Image 1: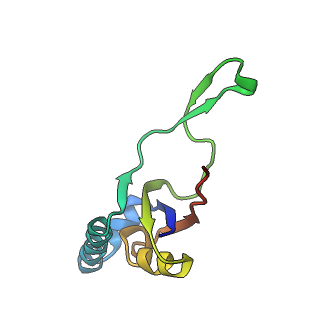
Image 2: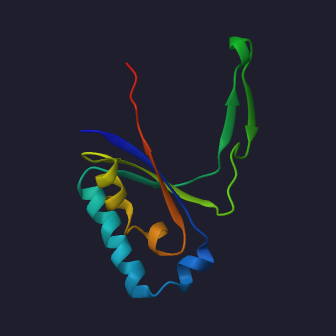
Image 3: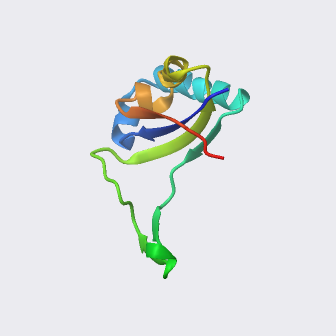
Length: 110
């Protein structure tokens, strides 16, 4: 089955202004995704890794990409297609609490 990477963005203040009943229902959706085998996690502090031409590794603390909203977390989900993946994440906390969830099809390499 196809897999998708999701990235959830959201501001904690927006999360807390969302009605508790909506947030509770969203967390039930997260639990449902986990029960289907999704790997879900909260974003920690990023580290950039570079190794130009394999001549020496360089690391830098902090993100390379930026967003108006902070990254809240990531998930690896399975779905029959992109439309189903979108439906699956449309009710998770970031999607319903004034944030956004990006869905990236994972094209696996061998």
